[in-house]
Image 1 (cartoon, helix red, strand yellow):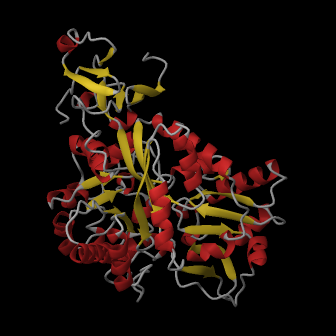
Image 2 (cartoon, protein in one colour; image 1 turned 135 degrees about the vertical axis):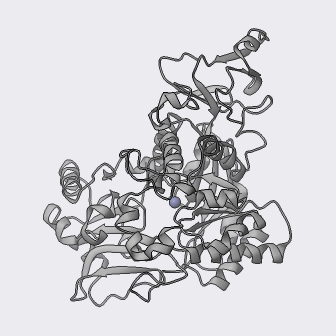
Image 3 (cartoon, rainbow, N blue to C red; image 1 turned 120 degrees about the horizontal axis):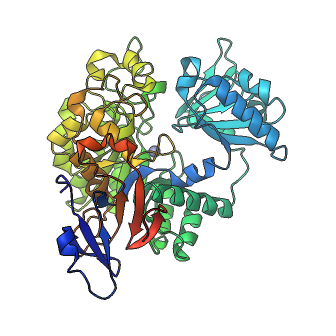
Length: 525
Ligand SMILES: [Zn+2]
C-alpha cells in the first residue's frame, strides 16, 4: 500500500477520492467539481486515526495549570507558583501534566506544594492520569489523615509515620478529586474544539476518545449536532468502577441517543489494571523483590461477566491493559463473551499492551482482538530504564512493547497516542515505532529492535489499522477511488530515506471529505 513514492496525484470529487495515479493521469481528471492534489515530491497518506486518546482532557489541560512542558521538580513548582499568582480568583488550583521521572521515587510531596501554595487546595494530575499530587490544604478539606484507609482500587502514598505524603495513586485520587468544582458544558465544548484544531493540524482525521464520561458526553453531542465536530469521533463510554448495577442500562441509553453527525458511540472502556511504574500494572509474577503482583481492577470472573454483558448489548469493548496478567484476563474475558454470545464482528481492542506473555501472543489473532498499542512509549526513556526494567527484571524487560511479535503472530494492530499522556503527533510516534529510540535522542540504543515495525507497516497501522478498530475501514484508512477523501499531505516524500527521520516532516494539508480542516499557508486548497 505504501510503495516507495506513493501516488503522484489524487483527484477529489464530492468529498470522495475520484482518482489515484501519476502526474500524467492527473491531466485527464477534468470533470466538473473535481479538484486535484498534485504531490510534486510530497506525500499523501490517508488521514491518521488515533485509536486511543483523551481529547477533551487534552483541550482542557491547556486552560489549567499546565505542567506537560515542565521536565523537573523545580520547573513544576515554578509553573504552579506562577499559575496560582495569575489566578487569585480560583478557589482550587487544578491542572496536571507532571511526570513521575521528575520526582524522587516518582512521588511528589505535599510539602513542596505547600511551599508555593499554602492557603488554597491544589490538585494536579500526573500526565499518565494514574496519580494525583495534592497539598496539605486539599488533604485537610478531604479529611485524609494517617487513619484514612486505602480504597480497594488505589493507594495513598505515606510517610513512615503513616501521614499522607502528597501523592495519591489510582482510585485514591478520588478522595480529593470529588471535591473539585464542576466543569461547565461550555468549558468542555471549548476544550474539545481546541483539541480538534490542534489534532487536525497534525494530520488526524478520526479519533477514538478512550473515556467519554457523563461530563464530556453532552458537550460532544452538542458539537456533533451543530456540525462543529469535523473530526470523525468514535467514543467509548467509561465503565466507572464501583458504580451500581444501573450503570449498564445508563450506558446503553447514552449510547443509543449519542450518535449524530460525525459522532459515534460504540465502545465501552474498562480499566483492567494500572501501570507498571507505580506497581499497579497487573503482572503474572510479582515485581522483583516483592510479593506484589499489581492490581486487577476487577476480579477476573467479574471482568468476564462484565465483558459478556457489554458484548450482549452490542458494545465494542476497549480495555486498558498494561501488565501480562491484565492482558491475559482481558483475553480470557473476550473468550468468555464470545463463548456466551456467539460469533459477531466485535473488534474488541486492548490498549497499551506493554507486556504480553508469549503464550498469549497468538490469542489476539484467534479471538480477533486488536492490540491498540502506544508507539511513542517503545523506547529506552527513563520510564522504561529507571522506573520499569529494575522492577520487572530481565526476562520481562526482553518482551516490552512487543509490536513485532504481535504482528508476526497475526494480531490486528492499531496505534493510539494516549494523549495527554504523551504527544499526539503521529509522525513522532511512527518514528519511535520504527527506530525504537526517543525522538529527542535519536542516536540512543534502541529498545528491542526485533520489535520494531518497518515504516510502511507503521504508516498502515496508524491509518488502515486504526480505521479497522474504529469501524471506519469501509470508508477510510486507504487511498482508493470511492473512499472518503480524508487525507493528509506531508511536505516531503517520507518513504525516501534520503529525506531524514519522518518525525521531522511537516503536515501541509488535512482534508476531511475533501474539505480542508487544516492548511499550511504554503499549500493553497
Ligand atoms: Zn488512555
